[in-house]
Amino acid sequence: MSAPETLNPRTMSEALTLLAEAPASTAILAGGTDLLVRMRDRRNWPERILHLGRIDELRGVDQGAEEISIGALTSHSDLLRLQEQSGWGALLAQAARQIGSVQIRNRGTIGGNLVNASSAGDLIPALYVLEARLVLCSSQGTRELPVAGFFTGAGKTACRADEILNQVVFSRPAQHEKGLFIKLGQRRAQAISKVMLALWYGEEQGKLVNVRIALGAVASTVVRCPRTEALLTGRRLTSQVISQASRIVQEEVQPISDIRSTAGYRRQMCGVLLVQALEHILAAS
Ligand SMILES: Cc1cc2nc3c(=O)[nH]c(=O)nc-3n(C[C@H](O)[C@H](O)[C@H](O)COP(=O)(O)OP(=O)(O)OC[C@H]3O[C@@H](n4cnc5c(N)ncnc54)[C@H](O)[C@@H]3O)c2cc1C
Image (cartoon, rainbow, N blue to C red; front, side, top):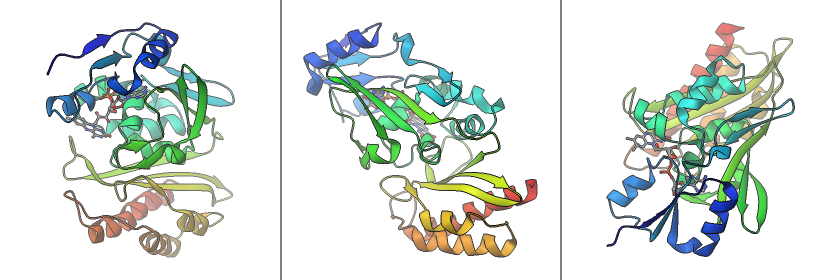
């Protein structure tokens, strides 16, 4: 096996031209924390590597009045610095904090987490509840996909071989809205999720509004929970409402069994994580 040719473009336009020359035999490299593991195990051995690391325009968080835009090369450590932001920033920081170790968070990127498309990718449920859109660029043009339409199966996405994920965007949420992220793994650190939950909500006159719930690592892609969201919307939180929500969420998920956990345990834990999140809101209100 000969060493792949490495390409180091400095602009997106240069990167897209290089990718268009041979998309099928080129692997895109961001932080390398997933790709290099696959190459070490010989599960992936591309002829060419397109390294995005020198493209500064792909890095950083742009906070517009209407929209937040995050460059695909923004690292998990960069997201952790958003923890002082209210709502969306704190949610992304909570999810980023759970990823691997300091070294992995320094190298790993939001773009890599999305395109790698592991069902246990920690940022993905948070981006579901923020109803993010993904901006994909190729030499042919630009298109935008809702995050829920991006994943087509475990490890599979709608990103074509000639496309680069450029940005993750979402509408700036209302000031009073907040999010919570809870991850359950085998250990507290350096563990892949067995189940994770992202919850987004606002409160108006003591009642929950705009409730969005996403569960990760329970199915081949992240799932939203529309029945549980509908049950909670417009309700005042009480211990009765919390146990009702826990029951409904367990009815509506269809978990899988795999090496990390069984379907039955995952189902039960979906209920437990939701109770934890709702009790946290109740205690804070
Ligand atoms: C020890 C260890 C612990 C880990 N722990 C966690 C964890 O706790 N939680 C978690 O979610 N993940 C974890 N990971 C996985 C990994 O760190 C993350 O998924 C990370 O976000 C991947 O980002 P990256 O920039 O390193 O991706 P890369 O490895 O560079 O790329 C991953 C895939 O995405 C493609 N890609 C990357 N960027 C783009 C782009 N802009 N456009 C198109 N395609 C692109 C690549 O071609 C490749 O197929 C861990 C990995 C390791 C090695």
